Image 1 (tube, helix red, strand yellow):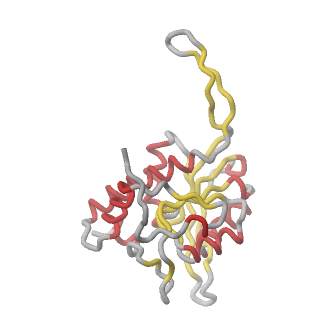
Image 2 (cartoon, one colour; image 1 turned 90 degrees about the vertical axis):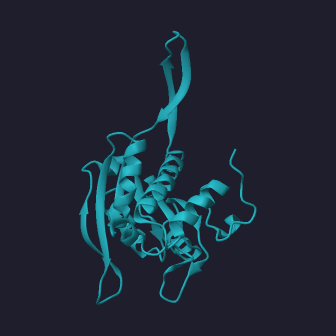
Length: 228
């Protein structure tokens, strides 16, 4: 049985978070996984393996927040079972490039799930996030969307991604943003702009430094994932 941490070393106080933010249950096992991926000496192979474990936990938690409807099935014993099923279809949308790392975890949990992609980078002239590319399922407006990006720092890229989804016809309350590490500043910025979006985060770090990097953080997720 996993023990719950009494004083997580980097977790922000849950009561200080916006109401639409959900964190994973802070257990000693989860703390151990984050300790491994935060360590600058962790090999690329171990970083991928242990971050994938966290991603699967996050996806499972995200699915817990989708609406359900009653569903009756017949078991092999011939007895009817009154259960539930998901209401409506889902899809994933990854924010490139780091968000692509979360696609495999989603596919392992949801077979044949459709996945879209959004590329957002900072405009060098305005310093604001700018859309460079998007490819979304044609029927995305009818689906619940799991928005995937491992890090939530200032919330600029995630906010731009939500704008793209809304322009494609996705209702704000049908978007669930999933990330491994966030910070109070980014969560406040994002949730103030999009109060109907649900945010599922694995860990809330202390904050941002003067360069707008999450601290203690884990460095550049994409670089550690894709660069040997």
